[in-house]
Image 1 (cartoon, rainbow, N blue to C red):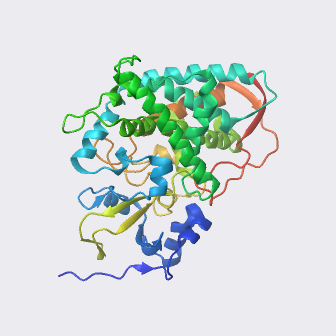
Image 2: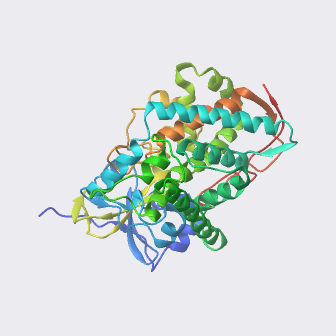
Image 3: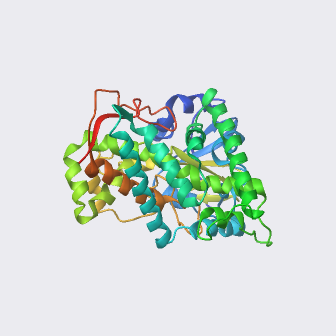
Amino acid sequence: MASTKTISKEEGLDHTLSLLKEGYEYIPNRMREFNTEIFETRLLGRKAICISGEEAAELFYDTERFQRNGVAPKRIEKSLFGEGGVQGLDGEVHRHRKAMFMALMTDERLKVLDEITKRQWEIAIDKWVALDTVILFDEAEEIMCRVACQWAGVPLWAKDLEIRTKDLSAMIDAFGAVGPRHWEGRRARTRAERWISYIIRQVRTGKLDAEEETALYQIAWHEDLNGNLLDIKTAAVELINILRPIVAIGRFITFGAVALYQNPEKKDKLVADEGNYSQMFIQEVRRYFPFGPFLGALVRKDFTWKNHHFKEGTLVLLDLYGTNHSPKLWEYPDVFWPERFAEWDGSPFNFIPQGGGEYDIGHRCAGEWITVQIMKTSLHYLAGKIDYEVPKQDLSYSMVRMPSIPKSRFVIRNIRRA
């Protein structure tokens, strides 16, 4: 039998408070302290093994060794993910459900998405030019809510836009939160599931027409492996799994605007887009700024990796932020430098802002293409379609608050068409 190594261990009864105090830096701090890419800790009363780096990501997405069912804490299911969604499925059930999402990511549907995004930015700019100031983050989330609902085929009345945007935003904001932010996320999910459940019932009873190519239609009529329709609640959770991540792109857009402001020499390159520079810029925004801190999975069966033993049922956390900022993988990782992606090898395991691995059958975010497409269009508007002033403000962002966002939410004023 091969010998195993002892994993570096953080001493103490529980380190949940340290995680809340250190946020995105919790895992990277200990990787540096222990000079390793694997260590053991205790979080929420349970043992957890934290891993980081490209090889760790490749391990993490081995479905023979890890499962997602049972990994998400109830507080996360009750706010961010919902119960019964694709994130917590495994095996053939997961592959079947994931295929439903991937069927929506056709070239034709992505072109429709792009046209909707452009139209919604035009509408927003028409409003902004009449205003003294605009808080970009709030406006970006509202734009994304309109885009998400129109693309998914979900009816959205103008009078409901504010509450729907706030609810989808609150679910995102509840991740990593305790107290009021968490409870608001739970209340928001209850309202959103009630809203979407009603719409799905309307579709199934023939009271609302849904176009066949939309997410609303496909999810409302999706059959499981036994040929049964999803129950209403699960269908609602999965449709929200389309809407909520698109609203979350508002954070990337805001960070992209910050990057443009702090790196003005990049603006003309982004607009000209020679050599697909916009793609490199967007990827660097997603790599550089904090978005997801880590992901979790459970060991499916005992195995040994790099002479370290992993026991069945153990919680394992993959360090997203630390991997995207690893000096072993990225030259000058703490510098915003889009040009680095001109030489990137395209690995699905060293650049993992929204997870890694395979799209079609793995647990990598199905909406990553949507994120990139919407960011390209949105930053094209911010860089080339409008001019604006950026007043003095606090553009710093917390590495403790998860998810993070610039403290001022990026205020702009005197907006005019370029």
